[in-house]
Image 1 (cartoon, helix red, strand yellow):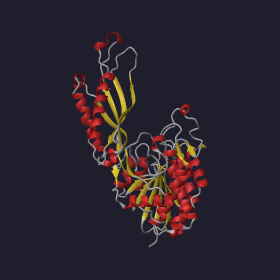
Image 2 (cartoon, helix red, strand yellow):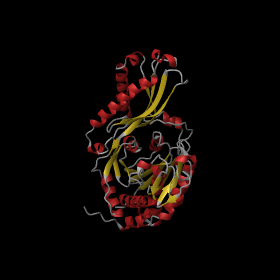
Image 3 (cartoon, one colour):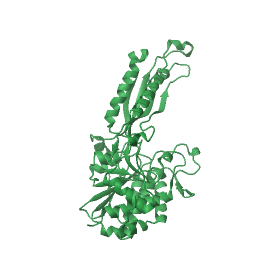
Image 4 (cartoon, rainbow, N blue to C red):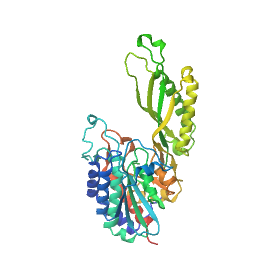
Length: 425
């Protein structure tokens, strides 16, 4: 397939992206420790950068209690007192509206000893910028900033026949309430791109996940008489074996090629286990927190129902748990699944622009993780895909990084895409 030729306006916007400015924006964002629940400083910084790039910017801080009361509230895993939203606008206020969005929160860096660089320094080595959030997803936010600067400096912004809205949000890592708040504040449109890391491929579908907490009982006894007790740890193992079998069955049942290509589209894990008060006492209670995949086409409520049926069946299979059942509750984020058709104008047009700018035809693919894409589609009635720099396999890990060349390429594609989508008729 021959790549579509860019218009002169789109080409100028793409060519006007400034690599040095991108690097400065990204390093500045990474240096702000915006762990989920504490995004105020990075939101103020991002707002200033958008204003400097030429956008009209609103800084909105809805009451978190109002968002928690929303029927579509996607959960949270941290205590917060504010939801700082940054909403930038460029172009005409009427006509078509397209959205570029990214989240400003990051996960904690973990043990500093596992890093070879300072996670908050934004160091550059061999063309990669390192730091917590560099990949997930401040690289994508920097690409949005670079695209806006390219549109303005090239003059393309003056020719837009509609409106570009940039939404930079908090709280994606623990559910997505920042994007829900932005949607409730009116951030909806004709098309949207979230610049989460995708290796510059186009993500048209994603699975979801819910966070669960198991409380598994046992019966205490002195260690010297352990046969008089029932170990809650052994009972947890009974539940884990049921979860393992369920994971295999749910993944084997998937038939959508987008998801089967992932190998394990719906993983289940237990990430936290706690219990016991004395080394010489048989455990009488274990608490385990984990993640349960939401299948494509499922809602979090559907997945919760599947999980509860699984735990009920595991309890019924064990003599002790029959009378002293393990319990499950849903805590933290509730990520639903989402997709757009592969022949939708959004992924088709974006893929053509990627090829025109970079010379590479991107894949249209799915991912096993949850994302705010499902909120734009489900709650905002806005077709949405993911397209951004970096590899999600390095996200949340030590020495997280994003290739600067990918940030630049992403910014150039976004500038061309906006110029084309909002070209005056």
